[in-house]
Image (tube, rainbow, N blue to C red; front, top):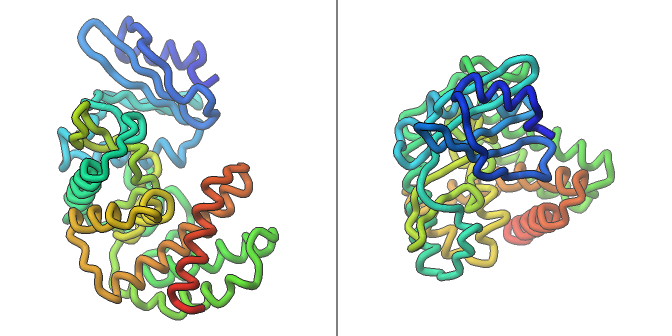
Length: 305
């Protein structure tokens, strides 16, 4: 249980007496989320069991999300004490798109457009010094981080594919696709590290009762990456059967649909899909595995490889 006695006492030391309104993610062993009420505030508490997720989320709130307030929660407090890693944030209006179960295509298209527009604003004018996860203080979380975009993408794809191949998760049939990616990684030459969210999805997009977009939540999967890295999860899992939603997101973002952009998208989708296939296989998540495998085959067919 992530919300043990020590964590509850830590929260009390920060906010004072509080009442628990609801607890989310009860089945998760990685993160816990709790809605609380104090005498003066309604707040959300999120606890992590990994610094690799706590660090970037705190950094994001302090450096990346301020430019898009009030369309994001604000950081009320954070704690990293005796193995307890947590953040306390203010709420924003609404529920997630998936919680609202929105099925109206016109509403969804507008939400995707607004999300693309807001994400572009968060990325604007932000330039990192390395590719990878930042610590709370901005230093690299991992050792041996890359500063060159071409080697960052190519070496990620090589290592990810080799790992899945060695484990028997992927076979020789995907080698031509991997070779094509590696051959074309020069398309990223000159790219600089930008705020990237590997979980930019309707799971974390908030809307009101009328389906109006109200903002983003959840930044634990953020890092300094390629600017288009964040789009992979959208194309891989959420818009494959509804490409007009992907188009709406891209229009909101202001993305040109030229051949260079398509090439970048395909390469980054291959990188993301291989990682997701490995995760889906190891965690027995069939949806994650199937969506990612579908994307690899689609790109391979599209590129006639």
